[in-house]
Amino acid sequence: MVRGASAETGVMLLLTFAKGIIVGLVLAVPVGPAGMLCVRRTIVEGAIFGLVSGLGAACADASFGAIAGFGLTFIRDWLFAWRDTLGIGGGAFLLIVGVKGLIAPRAVQIRPIGHERLAAAFLSTFALAIANPVTILAFAAIFTQIGFDPASSRLSIAVLVAGVFSGSLAWWVSLCLSAPWLRRIGMSWLPRFSGGLLAISGVGLLGAAAARLAGLL
Image 1 (cartoon, helix red, strand yellow):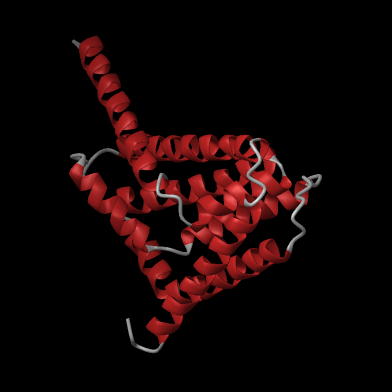
Image 2 (cartoon, one colour; image 1 turned 90 degrees about the vertical axis):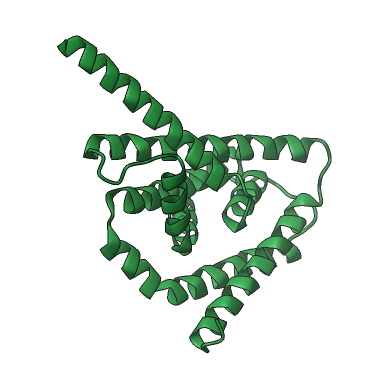
C-alpha cells in the first residue's frame, strides 16, 4: 500500500515537472529583448557568453514561477513598486548596447571571454528579465490553466518551478546554439539588426516607464 502511494506520488511529481517545462517554454519562446540580447552575445562574444546570458534569463523565469507558486506577494509587491526604476535601468542598458551594435564595424570578431564578464552577462540578463514583474501575473494565469493547486505541498511547487527553469533554459540554449549557424550562412547583418532591435526595445522601455511616471499609463 505504501509502495503504491509512493509510486503515485512519483508519477504526480513527474507530471508536475512536465507541466513546469511547458510553462517555461510558453513564456520563454516569444523572443523579446532578453532573447535578442542572448543571440547577439552568442554571435559577437561566443557561445559560452550567450549561454550564460540565457541562464540568467532562465533563473529570472524560475524566480517569477517561485513567486507565483509560493504566493510570495511581498516580493511581487516590491517588484511592482520599483517597476518604473527597473524599467528605466533596463531601457538605458538596452539602448546603450543597441547603439554600440549599430555603430560597430561590419566585420564581427568573436572576442575572448573573462570570468568577470561572464558574471556580468548573467546578472545583466537576469536583471533585464526581472525588470518586467508583469510576468508574475502571466505565471499565475498559466498555473491556473494547467490545474495547479495553490494549496499544493512545497515539494510539488518546488518541482513545478524546477520544470519552469528547465523549460526556459532549454529554449535559451537552443536559441543560442542556432546563432552561430546563422552567422555561418552569411547573415553578417544580424549583429547590427539585433543592435537596432535592442535600441528600439530600450526606447520602448524608457517611454513606458516615463509614461507611467507621468500618469499617462
